[in-house]
Each structure stands twice: as structure tokens, then as C-alpha cells.
Image (cartoon, rainbow, N blue to C red):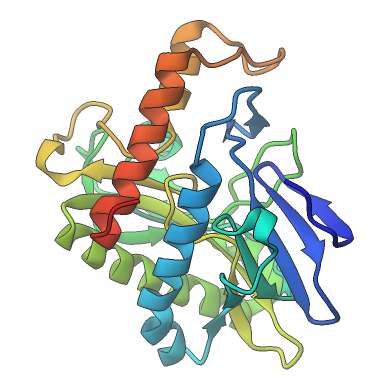
Length: 286
């Protein structure tokens, strides 16, 4: 992919280009990361799924954002260089906030391990008797830091969010994150998908307004489970990259050494999951 613009940053999945004084071009590659490490094997069409699904979700979530006096960063997904059409977005330039805003409606993954140790996730106390895959009594806000490539996101509690962004902004982030999750979960449920958890990233525009950025409710940023197969008590089948995480664990990778190449069947099955998520959520063929 060749873009004749200055490169601003290269993330785990995306390249960010300078598209003018108040614009950036976000280009989603087919790279896939797991456990905060970029894997050596790409997933065909993954960047296109992430981009086109995010564009769809920004439209769905606009009413929720507007009710909070917030907005999203998308300017256009069509006014982009031809070489990256379908996998890029022209967006507003923001000052990004240093918090991963995570919402959980179900117990899974690292949240399950934390709950089993302490009966809570961060500073959110949960009732006894929950198991992997259990629906929580109400969605919870469980933020983390934003790690650099090769580093690991670190769980933080709400007081730490306050120390990073101030009390009013921290409260706004928590309430908006949960509102977006609830609306996303409702839309997903109508499509036969359980939105178990997700993470959002927010920035601030020149006027100080809160803006939803990055990607939204994709298989990279969310756990998406087929509703008709949901069965608490074990790891759930999914339409996200948990399939890759599970394969890496079974391969014996120690999460420290260089990650292994993904076999062709794992690549194909991962692509199928991403495409299925897009098609079921949007109701349109990929």
C-alpha cells in the first residue's frame, strides 16, 4: 500500500498519515496482534473489515454520542487515496486521551481471572458464583492504560483515570463508554451476536469536545459471540481474534519469544470469523 502523504505513526494494525492541518488518514493493514504483539502472518481482508465495520458503527452510534454532546472523528471513507480505498478513513486530528475505555457486559478472558482472584474487576465488586461467559448484573467500566507496540496494556481503576484526565472528564468517559456499549450490545443482539466486551478510544478536539476515535466495535476491539451458542461455564465460540489467541496458547508460545507463523487453516478460519461478524452485524455481504 503506497500513500503519498507524510507518515505520522505506525501502530500494531494501522498507519497514520498527515492529511492536512486538521486531518489524518488512518489506514488499516491486514496485520493481527495478540497479547500486545504483532504476529508475523497477516489475515487477508482484515483491514477492510475493520474499516468498513467501524464506518457503519459510527453512523449507528451517532445518536448516543450526540446525547452526550460528543461526536466521532470520521470525516470520510470515500475521499481517500485509491491505493487504500476500502481500508482507510479520513478523520479529524485529535488530542487522544491516555486511557483505553473498556466496557464489559459478560465475564471473559482476563476479567475472569481477575474475578476468580478477588471477586471483582478493578474496583468493581461482582456477585459470587459467576463463571467464564456469565452475563454481569450490569455492564461495568474497567479501563486500562494504552501501551506502546511490544508493551502490555495495564489495568487501572477509576481513581487512576481521574488522576490522568481529571474528575469531570473521567466521569464523562465512564458514562459515555457504558452508554455506547449498551447501544452496541442491543444492535448486536438483534443480529444474533453477544457483545461480551469492547474497548473505545477517545480524544479531544480543538474546542475541548469529547470525540470517539480509532476503530469501533470490531472483532479486533471486541469479543463477539454467536448468541445461539452462548453457554456460560467455558470459553465461548467467537467472531473475533480469540480464535487466534487460543491457537497461540495451544502452540506453546511463551509470549516472550518471537511469535510463530499462523497456519493456513487458522488464517482462513480467522478471516471467516471477521467477515461473518461484518455480515451479521450490518446485514450486507462483504
